[in-house]
Length: 136
Ligand code: ZN
Image 1 (cartoon, rainbow, N blue to C red):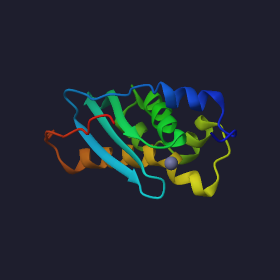
Image 2: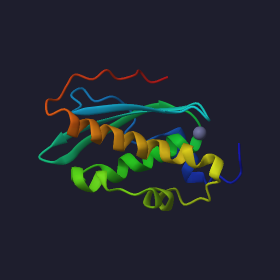
Image 3: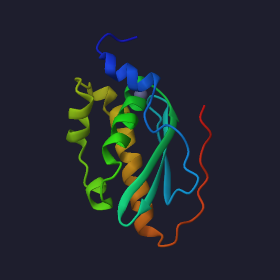
Image 4: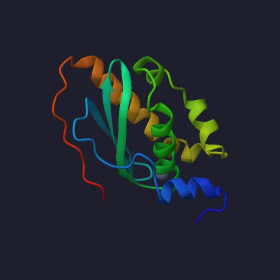
């Protein structure tokens, strides 16, 4: 294990927050980072214009999974607009470690997946049934 990982990154990796599947997700998206083999499926339950519920499943390196854990904690309770406006540098601050260019894709996968899920929300007015990937 790379010693640049801080303990709390590993803690989020081992016991990720918001890990699981929503029964009634409004929108969902599966993202992957082929460079590293990371996968994240993010589900959002939108109510009254807010991210009322958020859950993810996935597998991959510690940075990708810790990033999803931290990001889902952040956006829970946010308005859809605020969640959609969440920036990459805010997520990097949250991670609090120096991310090499090679690992940036790992760190940003959760945010890209969130953005894609929110974009799907705009595209379809009706909450379509979404298939969630089972945790590995
Ligand atoms: Zn990775």
